[in-house]
Image (cartoon, rainbow, N blue to C red):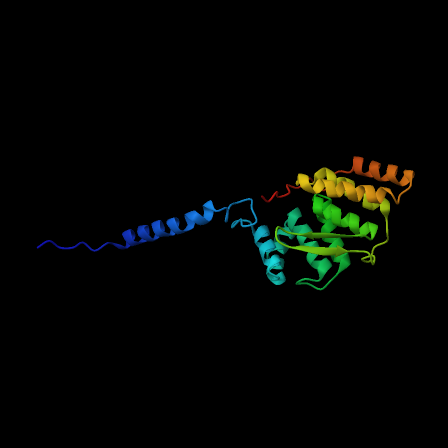
Length: 209
């Protein structure tokens, strides 16, 4: 009579790994959990966006704040929007502007757009892949109206935007601002944009697929 061999622990572990791989393969092939996308499992910044989209602002704050403090320009922009909205933190336009300016000074294009809107006392929308929210500064947001500043940031945003489809909207924003400016103001703004340099250096913006 032959004895039946009992699989060892290592064999059970290998079998479990094989079944897990077979389970996860269709998910990876379907486009989820791929680096560089909205579902990137390794990017804490993207995890923060997913928390934000679910209304879990405290969790988004926990994802973004350490990154922002470490110099991540995308997280700095997002942290600024939390303070602007009063989402997960008390609303504070000065703190919102601080983080937006910190990101914009490194070439973060969305932060530059929002600073342009703040300076122009304008309104726009921002968000993510699945959600858009109003960014309304028609009431001033605690900053004086400055169309030269607005034009400068909008022009820089067009230059640094990593999404080709968004540039057309920024061009329309620039045209709208130009209509309310004098020739001297436009010249001044264009000169400021031309001579602008990233501080401390230009950041590497994410381009989420």
